[in-house]
Image (cartoon, rainbow, N blue to C red):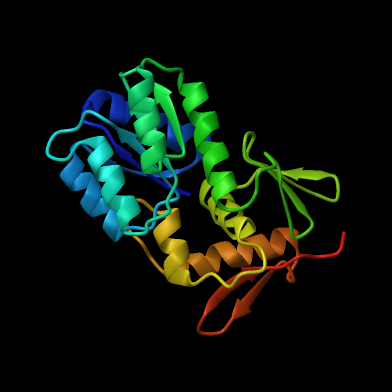
Length: 222
């Protein structure tokens, strides 16, 4: 999963990014002003945007209004030092999905991020059940037939993304865009390596290849 942080407090943005990368295995991009944030939000397929309200160049609420007016449905979590009801109501009315007031605990931010992403994919349960697997995003453990598996970071990230879209063909380009952040080097052939490894671990029928289109995680009878 890939998250965009739009926050002008650079130290805070870096701290949030570190937590999201290390504790949740997310790919993360950072913008320190509203103009850069809007550009990134328009050009990349994010699973969640974390948005500060008091931004230079384009204010947070204005940025949110622009995104929603363009039909962009990416979940948005507002961070704000403004605890007033009016600001919260305005943010919700403009289309934000959740909010958190500063200062906040990183554990709560992380939990809200997970919940928003799950809901956006129609997976409200904190445990993902797909393809005969039980995926626990909190522990990053995958269980099959009672056996727990701890996967390498990128393999887990790929499996979780495909599981969120069980039964859908997902193109290689979509996978690359959601697995890696803006600065990462992307090698398309590495996806085949990860897919092969997942098939060896969980069975050859778990992930189907649709030639020229992409990959699909399928339901397998338990």
